[in-house]
Image (cartoon, rainbow, N blue to C red; front, side, top):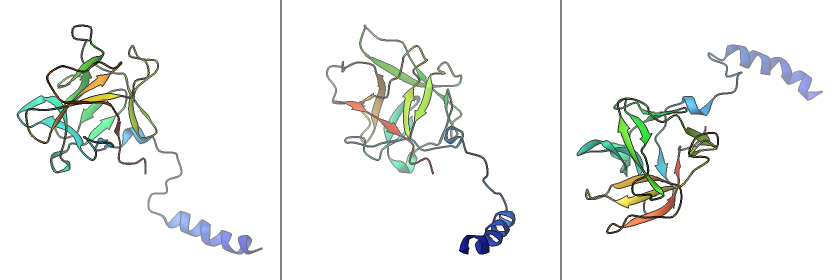
Length: 167
């Protein structure tokens, strides 16, 4: 009975809303900061290395970029696309770059986690390798498809990159 009394109020509220959100949203179409969730890249964000705009790194929030996510990932700040490069010397970590054109259409979201899609040539990959950059406070990132790490540099394996939330 109470529900029947409240029904007209609920309908009025819905009609007076300036932009009712009646359709489900596609979270991939909203621009996001992309962040790390565990040490050493906990609360560091995807961005271009200040001294090399084509090098994607995890760095401080104050200089982070916003990205549109679809099958490609594009920075709203620079318009550059996050691309996956070929294997180097047969190693399992793949270099990433930020380029003017999109060469990678394998990206997807699984919940709030950035992955490569199962249907892509990479298969479902969600792990990244983060290696200390020569620029203090920044970590160069690679897509990790196995367990190799480069020698001579401090790296942390099996990192994941996330949107802040799908709110």
